[in-house]
Image (tube, rainbow, N blue to C red):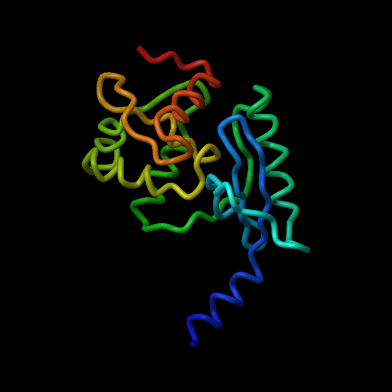
Length: 168
């Protein structure tokens, strides 16, 4: 019973907005002053009547709109993705990959003193895809690797193409 009460209290603090993007309908969530989640929304998801928004969600939508129009290369939003300390280190490193550039799981793993598989797992658990650009991380030799968002690899290819990255 206490867990449910906590969940209800937490849900009241969350703000949610939907954004129709070229890679599918995104659900943006914020808790207070920070963006906490970007996820692909299910087909049957509908905004709740009287649903909450927030200034950070409005700004996230504005920046996503500019990103998909090719007018934004770097997101500037307060972020609060939930994860382990290692995952947060990986996400921070991904955030440093410039627009139109890529990194590899192995290269990131070497820089972090970890394994490529652990980096790949952290990429797959990124709660803020697109904003924290996990799509810019490739396998060794430029192999596309994986992608857990949207339609999977076609979505990753679409995001990379938007940034001018040509995969062989």
